Amino acid sequence: MLKVTTMRHKGHSETRRWLKTILRVFRVCVVIFTNIRVKMTFSKVDDTKLKSNKTESSMHIEQMYTNCLAEAAYYIESDGEAAIIDPIRETNPYVLKAKERGVKIKYVFETHFHADFVSGHLDLARETGAEIVFGPHANTAYKVHHATDGEVLTIGKISIRVLHTPGHTPESTCYLLLDEQGNEYCVFTGDTLFVGDVGRPDLLDGTMSKEELAGMMYDSLRKHILPLNDKTLVYPAHGPGSACGKNIGKETWSTIGEQRKTNYALGNMSREAFISILTTGLNTPPPYFFNDAAINKNGYDALDSVMQKNMKPLSPHDLELEMEQGAKILDTREAAAFEKGFIHHSINIGLEGTFAVWVGTLIDINSPLVIVADAGKEKETILRLARVGYENILGYLDGGIKAWTKAGNGLETIDSVTPQVFCSLMGNKNETVIDVRKAGEYDTCHVKGAKLIPLSDLEAQIRFFEPNKKYLIHCAGGYRSMIASSILKLHGITNIRNVSGGMAKIKEAGAPTEATKVEA
Figure (cartoon, rainbow, N blue to C red):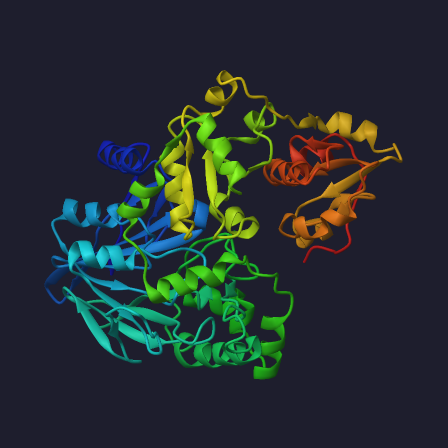
């Protein structure tokens, strides 16, 4: 039997020191380490030890979760050798982990060409000499090991069996980990199987129809996933919030048995019914998805060189010159700071939210950008942009917004109102309530009379805003509504007020609400 010991971050000094070191080095999104048996946020995974037939061996598995991407990478180790599955672009977390534990990274496994982030496989292979492994049909512009369906690769005393599972993409592959006795232990499912969902089949940009890919997904699940043991752990590449699935569950791991009971995609249905379900209700994917998939397929510049090129301090005068040449200003400060004063034509996407996803949704990947950030957050901003392939960064405002005003330049503001004031304004016929949440959120509960314009669709709907009307903008908590307000201001829609606190606080204030769809 496998015995798992959990070490909580809060009460364990070694774990606390380890996490602080990582956070100091990267200053990026919180990386969560999740126990391989029991979900423990901010816990460090301890080694699991397998005892059988008078022999003792060990393996070590960590889920390294990046919140702002809703992405899970995995560190696997056995007998002095390690492998990384689906690494994010910065490689230091994996290199440091292997160095701390005195092991060599042998393989970098990729489950598919990721569309939502730039993978760290190339930099990691260059730094460590590890071999990059893809499944069948992964035609890359660089050297990799093209594993065949059923092929077995060893990591120390454990092994990985390749399961080719086309459906999300043609090259999508799962990796089944077998313990030293050859027993199924866990399966790394990439974007094939999520908790409560499967990968969307519409990301090939016309190369193959979503119906064709959905049919492949149906076959893959029944050939390679459903036959696995109920106790086999499921480790997907994404958790809740990712746009790679329609409705991913709140957990970041599960078991085959649990998914067999609760995941609609593993239910007993015909191929035709499955295809219909999987291809219905898909939101438009963020535009950058197709760019990132191509980057991961064709290769990219080393992250260090990208950071060196883009970390360029700009004076207020420099920034003005870049604006005259067509650069966009991306202000990454929190909404509360942004509304009090920002540079004309800025768009606000705060670092505290799902920053990379919204940048990828709202800003063209080739747009030249100038960064306005809180002091000390410039590097984090540029790093997080590079994670999703945004590298056309002209620099950052040196000294931040204070430097801009010190140079004698003016600022624009956005008015915000409390939920209580919002309720008092609702009866005014000249006030239009704009809800920028997703359609599903709106259907579940919305303010009576509110007009739904999801944030992702806002720019396409700008022409419908009337200059003589007044608009109250809200979302769930205030993050998206400030993004929306900045976009409206940028387009000359000035009669707007942001509602602080979002829908949760609006309901508490007693605003009349209704639903257009009954919750399941």
